[in-house]
Image 1: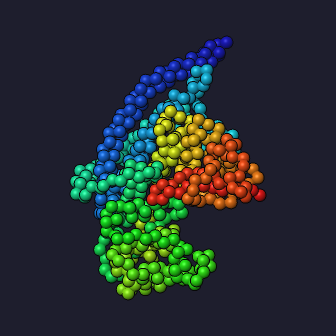
Image 2: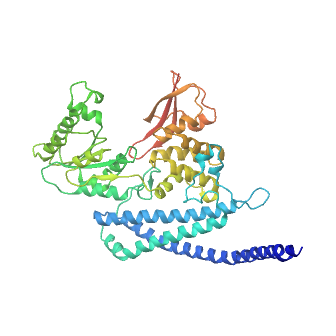
Image 3: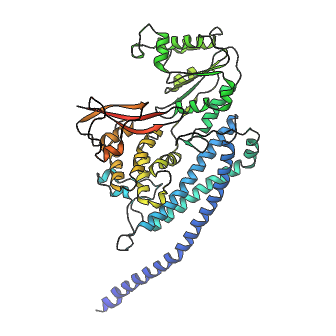
Length: 492
C-alpha cells in the first residue's frame, strides 16, 4: 500500500497533470498557428493580385523578345502554383469541416474519399501531399496549409523582387492585341491554355524577314500535347493573316502522294517519298507570301534535307515552312531559321485548372465538394496530362458530379489501366458494352447519336449502324475545326 501511494498514485497524478498542461498549451498555440496561416494567406493573395496583373498585361501584348517571354513563362507557372496552394488550403478547410459523421462526432483521422474506394489497399495507400495527406487530422492540415502558403508566398516575393517594375515597363512598350471570340473550352482567358509563350515564338518566326533560302521551324512534342492546335492558333493571329497571302496545310498522306508513285499510299512508303513530296510541294508556283504547314512530319535524310534547305532554286523564297513532329532530333534537323519550339506537358498545378473546368462543370466550386475534389485531384495526377484526356474523362466526371461511386470507379480503373491513350482504356472498363469490342476512336464530321451517358444509363442497347456497331460521342472540338471525337464498338 505504501508503494502504491508513494509511486503509482504520484505517477498517475503526474501523467494526468501533464496531459492537462499539454491540452492547455495546444489550445493556446492553435490560435497563433491559425493567425500565422491567415497572415500567410493574406500575403499570398496580395502577391497573387500583383503577379496576376503583370501576367494579364503581358499576355495582352504582342511580345517578340524571347527573354521577356521566358520570364513571362516563369511568372505564369509561379502564379498557378500559388493559386494551387490557396485552393489546397481552402479544400483543407472544407475537408476539416466535412470531417464529421452523421451523429455529429468529430472524426480526427478521416481519410479522403479516394482512400475509401473498394480496390486494393496497397494501390490506394498514396495520396498527394498537395491535397491533404493520408490519414491526417485537422491540426496536421493546418500545419501543411501554413507551410504551403508560406512557400508559395516566398516564391512570389522572389519573382516580384526580381522584376516587377522593369518587367511592366518593358512589356508596355509592345503593341496590344486585338482579341477575337472563340467557341471552345480549350481557349481560356485570351490564349490557348498554357501555350502563350510558345505561340508568340511561332508568330515571331513567321513575321521575320529572310533571304532566298528555305526558312523552316519545327514544333516538337509528344502525341496529343497540342502541337497542331498551337500552330493553328498562331496561324490565326491577325499579324500572321495580314502577312501571308495564303496558309496551306499538308497531312502525311498528301505529302507522300505528291512524292511517290501513282497510287502509292503512305503505308507503302519507306521514307524518301516524304522528302520528295515536300520538295515538289514547295516548288509549286504561288503568288505572294505563303505559309506551308506540314503536320506530323516523317523522318527524312538529314543530309538530303540540308541540301534542299540551302538551295536557292527551290522556288520557296516567299514561303515559310512549319513542321510538327514528335522526334527531337528530326526537329533540330528541320529547323533552319530558329530553335525548335518544344511543347512539354503542362505543370500539374496548371493542368489541374484545365481538368477541373470539366470535372466540376465549369460553375461548381470544388470547395463545395471536398471529397469529390480529393478523388478528382488523384485522378488528375494519374493522367498523362494530355488535354484530350482532361476533356473526355473530366467531362464524364462533370456529368456525374453527384455520383461518388462512379468517381471512385474511374479512379480504380485508372489505377489498373495500362493502355494508351488513357481515356480509351478507362472507357473500355467503365462502359457496359457487352458483346462488343473496340473498333476505332477518333474524329468524325457528323455527331454520333449515342452519348456516354446513354451507354452508362443503359439507353443504348441497340446498334446505331446497320452492321450493329455503336459510335459513342465523347466530346466536340471546335477550335479551328468542327469535329466530334468518338469511340466505336463493333459486335463480335
